[in-house]
Length: 510
Image (cartoon, rainbow, N blue to C red; front, side):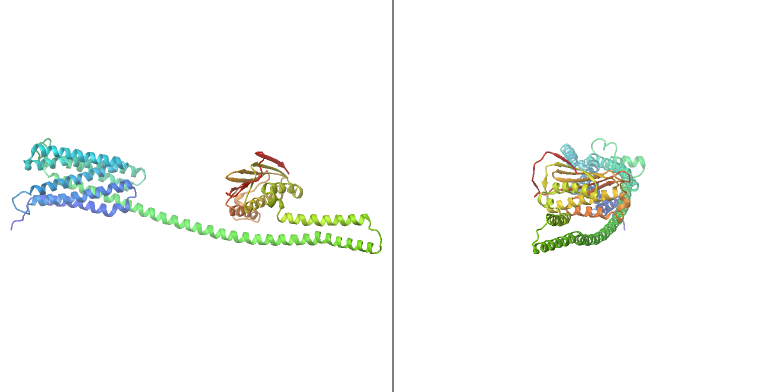
């Protein structure tokens, strides 16, 4: 029994179509997840569509050449038109792929694709107008025009686009991806320039001079074999590039997971350290409160209590004098008056230490001014105090936080800086208020003092916590032998209000 087809070109068409169809399937499966570049991803979608449709076209042409429907007859004209239309559409997708790989602007991509389609349609209309109704001449002429106008162009554009992307990936250090793009680009360019420039014999130049028949006579094998080799080579190159992209993607995912785990570990450590810091700070705050209570109790017992006891004795002495009808001496009354004044002064000092009335009555600027004056009296520290901007009443929490920071900073200067002078500036510059305390003392190493917090750094930690609690930041600049600068920056709230209009800058020396 004789086989329905004996033409050796039939298996070549089958492998040719299988190569492109396999390329399309590989691109559909692989490119969506591996290619993160949106421009290349869109282009790969067009190349996948070309590969699938072009593979189906080659199988359709194999079916036509085999004569399996009616032995000894040619395919109907409608089927031939369908074949040429399928070929043209597949090559137009190849052109679209090349344009997308070369141009990043989508409007330009669409414009060039439409232009190529219009050129093809004009040429096809010219061929039909010239050779119709000799359809046996029109069909090979349309096939040749399709390969010249879209096949060669699409192969060159696609190859150039892959080669350009290969250079880009090589510059990024992804050599395996670049090599795959390069192999596929050269194969696709060869497929277009050589494989599509030898169509079936046609009725116009150059198809009537150089065609697939002439190619086989010159080289001894059909042009379809060269096209098949180009398709297979391009498939291997593209699959290799996509695999390299997959490996790179996996490495990136592993790196991202490792980085995320490190970040989570650091966050947990930071949370644990902050919790420990807050717990220790709370413990020290409670301890400080107890120490303050003990100090107040001692002062009440040692100073105010003794003064009140003396007042009681003086009153008893006066009562004895009056009971004996003796006149009260001026000296006894004077002593009693002095004791009462002393008791009142002691009590007022303790109340002021707890919270100065100026802070509630007159605001932050007046309270800090008073604090600078007290630093000279109690700590022997000469403080140069300056106010800049328009004085503004702040919220109670903000004023308290800035006042306590000033108090703690001046105490630290007197205890540790080994100087007898400091500078304090308070600047109201909406939308922020800035407090700065500067000394030219011995300074300290912040790294050693704060990481982890030493016994001398809890005052700094407390200042930072106070400022952070009102939405501000505390910046500390210090180094051994270079003094210390503490700067607190707090945003002004919408409810803050101006209470007094003064010159832009006021300087006061305490």
